[in-house]
Length: 455
Image 1: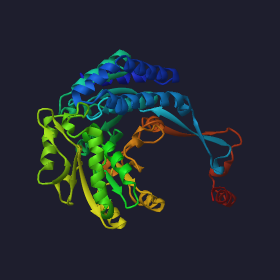
Image 2 (image 1 turned 90 degrees about the horizontal axis):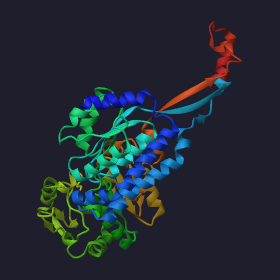
Image 3 (image 1 turned 180 degrees about the vertical axis):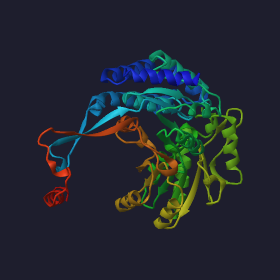
Image 4 (image 1 turned 60 degrees about the vertical axis):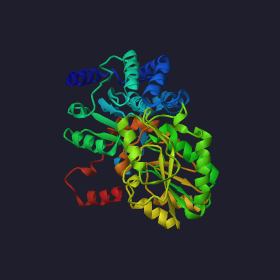
């Protein structure tokens, strides 16, 4: 079955039907039309899978996809044009340019936390670059996977774009197929397995992973703004966001003020008992619910942390006095638990971050421009914000992706076109004059001339 799907897509691609600008625009328009047709079903599915309210689902999933579609369609013709670059004097007279071509048949493996957006955003990149695509959505978000399958089948023939549904743990069957490119969003451990499997066919991959994203609050920060924006970014989707702040590093001098303010921010946003808030998302399943519940044990939870096993909801929890060897600090939390760690000097905060894996995101709250510059120059990370959290992922003008253990490759906007394309460097040489200096025999005169030309 899988072999037939991939073979059909490769055959379709070989007929060059996906290459023209008109074909790519038709595909993007068909996708947009189908999304709009099924938008109410998308909201209902996200409610079933994650208890996302329509407002949150629109803000974090549907609107981001529609905005990306609009941006890509506006710029696609220019991206597809030959990119002329300068030519070294040694190659005169000639023209140098870059031609972008699609990889072919690509595999997109998407996660459950933003199941609609993280399936369709990569697909937009694959289509605008001229590829065919197989989408494998998460089995943890079945209602959204149903809608994605419906949207894709309404918009495309299966040899162009199709959805495959596999059970948990069956990714190996899919990865055994000879795809031309693999785009994966998910955990570090699964990302390692996918990269290993892809190596057998030397298939290029993009890995959008995660990590422990630090959020630094210094002694010059606006504490109220910091608390509000951290509460928004951390507890959106009940903390099940790969770019959510994973832990706070805060100057000792402002910690008490922040702890008081973050409690007010959480209450203002989610109410006195967030687990009873109908618009507050749930943890995706029992496995992750109990994993997070276990992380709360033996910790100093000073704000929130209530939970309801019947609904898989855990209230935003702020944990004080967290040690470096706490279970909370060993892996990405991926839930509404926020550890707070204090520092006495900026150098101490930098060292804490640099002693860990490179994060997918980094956030700094400060009004000190010099300190801002220092962190941007000295701390490696995929992307981030100054005086805010997570909003960088919502810009089509900014490439999004990780570095090191938080991933490889970037997408969004033009970076989506680039990452799903092979970029061929070409020199077009004039037929005349054909200066014979490079041809043997190499006389003393030619050697002198070459040194002059190539210096």
